[in-house]
Length: 123
Image 1: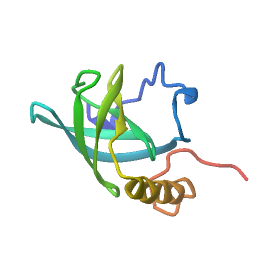
Image 2: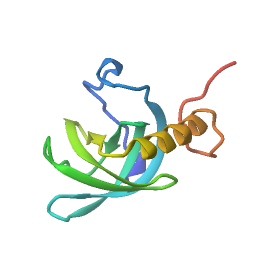
Image 3: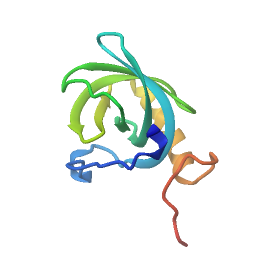
C-alpha cells in the first residue's frame, strides 16, 4: 500500500497538546532518522512548531529526525510522540524560520497553494 493511500490514525494527538494551531495538509516528502536510514512520508498536519507524519518506520521518542517536505523544504526536529502508522515531531528552528513557516501554513489554510490543504471550509 502506498503511503498516500494510507489513512492516518492520529490517536492521542489532541489539539490541547499543541502550542499553536495545526493546519491539515497533504504533503509528501522524505525523512531521515539518526541512523541515516531514509523513508518516504506524508505530512498530514503541521504547525510552526511541529508536524504529524504518516511513515513506514517510526523512530524512537526523543530521536532526531530530518525531513524534506514538498513545498516546505528541510525541517529538523525531535520525535515527541508515536502513533499507529507514524509519529509527531517538534521542530528545532529559529524564530525567523517559524515565522516563515507560519506564513506558509496560513496560505495553505486559505488554499492559496493548490492541493496543500485537505480540509474544505464551508462559507
